[in-house]
Length: 390
Image 1 (cartoon, rainbow, N blue to C red):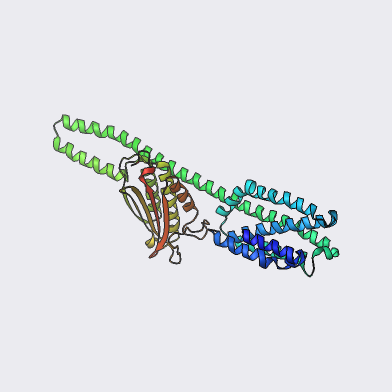
Image 2 (image 1 turned 60 degrees about the vertical axis):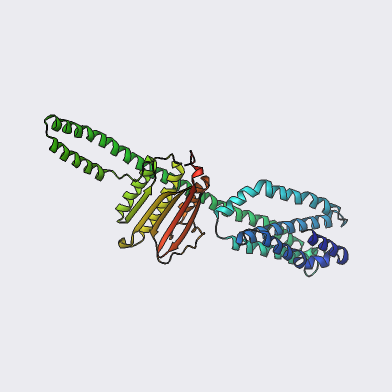
């Protein structure tokens, strides 16, 4: 930006502030916009709003210090210089030191509306530019000063309204996230409780089975005891589904297998996980949210189209999870994109943000996409993130 600043300072020295004030949009604003747009990673609405906001605040400081110097400083530029020397670093300190963190949170949480905010901010910028420089500088049109002062007061109030509305959206986002996590924990605990109750019932029944077998063997009825034992094994198999050895992860699969059965969905579980020590908190969070999204999507389909499959396996150094379910025919998600986090009217949404966060804690990645009428969620987690580096 150094050469651009030098050229504008040279223009002020050669042509004066009045002429440069009328053309600075061409000599400063547009070149700086193109430079920062090229340097920015996010070139969409959030960038436009950030740039327009910063430029408008700078122009506001320039206008205020000009007016103060004209009426109180005798146009000697001393008050203008001192004012800008104080206000610009103060504005930067407030922006970077105080407002950057909540502003970044807003950018992460609020997906839409940035283009509209950027357009409004650009209009404010144009309004300040025209009001202060056309047809001549404002100090030569003192009768218009009251209206200009009202514009200067209205601008920060408008931005305060914008940020208040956006902050309410952030609070709503956090509340939905908390509700989702609580529901997920509730589902996991219910599944664990069901599993524990089933185990207690099985232990109770085993006492009766053992007593019967002991009686048959004591009486020498070996064939009858063998037949009875085969019957016990069959009954145990039908009572409890065992998807994997980890009791926490298995409880999640048992819970959602029951949910899929309730809505008449065909489910296929291919779980190749042994007794390794796994980070079950994050994995349960990933599976619960992924399967909950799949369940929500299937509820909106005809019963004959309700199909879901889950694969979970090791591939050398990685744990791979794939959840694949039928979805609406008009749903399209390109690879690398995550659907919007509004669950209303969407096959998938809010829970995917939680899946991404849980995977990131394990240095993992997720990939979502649609293909042939199915929504696919892939999660890849390096095994070095596991407690013993499985």
